[in-house]
Length: 157
Length: 319
Image 1 (spheres, rainbow over the protein chains, first blue to last red):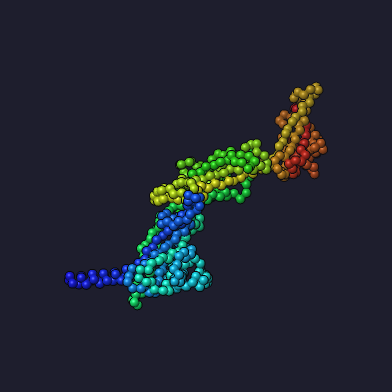
Image 2: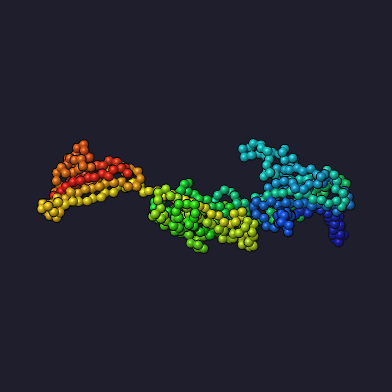
């Protein structure tokens, strides 16, 4: 009995260690514009507190390879939150390509290649309000210790 | 009975309901020496606050036509909650405005209790500040009436304006001001782009009363003795002066005047504008005692405002 538990615990520990190699952290930020001592307008990013319809939120996903091996075929996917509409990609590493899904995450492509079916059964080009997911596909592996972030803007309906 | 009072406009025009939590979580997939792995980020939660915003639109298609001196004339306004949470509203009227020809006299504000878009006295309840301030869910609207009396001295063609001002009871201020805990369910409320206020201005236009007929009757008594005592044998000559006032033309005017009791009509004395009118019914405009026994009847036809006055005269003798 104790040996079975010990093996189970070891297996869980090892599995947990492998899954922890690349860490992902999500944050929501908003822009605040203030006037500094010199009378200039300064825009800063602060954690999103209260938001109201019409506000734009900047979702920032930071990633880090905490393991000892390079991580290949890295793909970060962010479903667009309910009540939010994608506005644009804010930040993207130079080695990553961006694609969008407008069908719930089945097909990803450049926005201009996406279509949706309208109420009459006709195909029409997908609009931002149709987007369901945004994805970054990294072309190069992430070396051990490498960190970075991706971010996109979305508007609260 | 308030079933008709509130309406709801288009689906969620006011936005995501206050109190909704917006959540976001990203996923990552990668390979390490060919083996597949995936990981989730934390979930970041952003609560939606209540925004205070309203729209007020004057509903009458054109200035409301009113007569000088008329009372309780209504201007209609539609108030919509364009925020994302339920709110109640303070209502104030103001009629001492500049830029118009006269100041209406503000009397009261009423709610369209039966929701029929028309002011119904006695049915549409009067607004009592702090007592029955309208409460609107997000996207709901209510119709309101601003009532004014029109000064008797206002003249035809003049315009008089009256303004309805509405403020959120949760708070007003600069757009973006946060009122902690003041919103629905104790959430924070944020003053919207309109500052939590809205105002609407409506107009009245003064028009004349429509055409009315006025008859001035005078009498001249001549007695047999050279005087003017109303004794037996004296004659009374009546003059009826008929004019139209207001605007327009009154059609098919007929004047009837009963021969006074204890007098006898002097045959042949009926005149219209000094032309004799026979006593019998014929092609001329009048008769005596034929259309109606004991009565002078004169048909004037259409009488236009501004046209010449019509003078009817006839003489009787006191019995």
